[in-house]
Length: 403
Image (tube, rainbow, N blue to C red; front, side, top):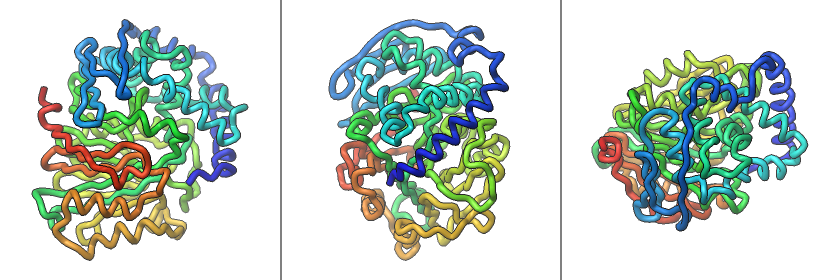
């Protein structure tokens, strides 16, 4: 649930930290100007109904699998950015207004200029290819005029927090089929807007692994996704840590983009751990990771990355740290329900959905999904909350990754 006073205090700290960080970068131009100076190539296109209209643009394509809009992007960072904007921009005006509305609802509207500055500062610490991709998207003709300030905020939203969420990975020995399963609820306050804009991105970047990501227009980072090696990730917010690390560290790398790097560069849980260890985090976060053999939760702070492996074939995760070095002992009613998956065997996609429904957070549960890493399948419900009791659409990702 969104606790407004706590969120307001956190946003104030973000704004203050950003102001200090920006002093160190004051000699640099604005985010989009900085990227443009490094050689961004820009262009134009459009789309429409259902919320979106099937379309093609510069090698990218938007099509539907059942009710799910699938946005297929490929090529260089600039090409991916332009395709993203052309296919989704014209029908996404409401979602591009969402970040500012969300901040205003928290009582922090006066901090919006500082928060957008914080977002630009954070993006300057992201890998160059992501800066170029997002700048190309922001400059594309299909997007609304305010998008240049919204895209940085949207892609650092993890740093502004309030992702609820539940997830559980069930390893091979407890599933009925071939391989592990990862179930996940994405819980967030839609404000009667966001639930209408869920999309599945299938991205084939030049020279990197193809991946699928369940997200929203304007989001280049990853909140929930799987790559062509069957490696899956899902993020879960955390509010307290025992390691006395900073709740927001503006010298870190935007975490949604770090999680995208995992899908583009890694194929196993161990490789994901190494990448996280080598990348400074901006805040506290849980990341559940599952490959074709095993699963783990990484408890992340600006100072530490702690690993929690499966217990009896089950890895459960909600919104608290549970390792000895990071836990504050905070309880969560959803966690024991997920961990009780140890009491059963022969888990299926259908029973996983039932388990995720048992931990839904009513009006906050916008997306429910089950990944099959070995089969490269995604089962997705992304609709009006709670999504956990709505029919899931099965999407075969292998042919989409291969094309």
